[in-house]
Image (cartoon, rainbow, N blue to C red; front, side, top):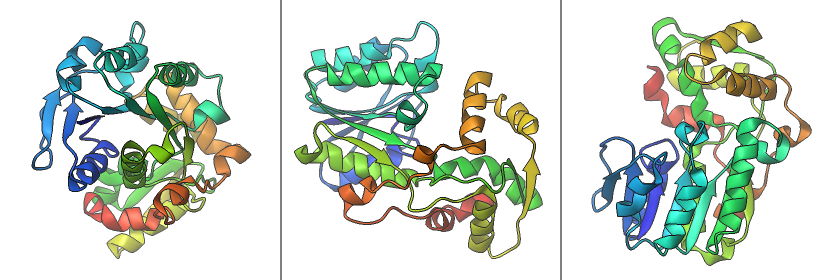
Length: 279
């Protein structure tokens, strides 16, 4: 049995589907009731309360761990999830971390994530750590404005990073869960090329077959919008990366191709596949 946390999200959903298609027994964990592929067991649990995960872990051999925002809250115990998994007999953990652990290691959330990486390494289980950069699916923040006004509003229009399709992260995670050759590896996951918000807007317009205007926000305007759904510190961290990416954050990693034997999908591929969200 393989347990997938965050199983209904942008990474967890394609991962769950890939494992089910591979004939694996899968337990999908999410905070709310949701549809899952046929043959997949679904368990509702909140990872901020590790004890609630025990029913899902019963009989599990492997765990994909995707942290929810709650696990970064004061008093949260993400290492407790690892401890309970090990106690339940889980012998392989694939952790979804973040590229920021390597590129900007001193922020509060990255320090916490580094500590969780260390807990995974020290757990006694086999492990693989995945460190993705920016997600192509963050463009869904623009979906409503594209649908209603045919406009993308974002800061730093001509500064880009190599965003990755979450489906590629899911496929890499599936390979790591199923193949012991990936044990002990840390993979940095990016898309195939740097793309700017203006370039993303053009790709969305091409997928729609109709013009989409780009409107550049100031940093202050962007932060005001972001803090409606995330802490101010995290918004500032994100804007620091988007506005002034380091050479390491601009680097196109070979690791997706190394694991999957093919190049990562482009943002244009992602936009074409998800165009319905923008119609």
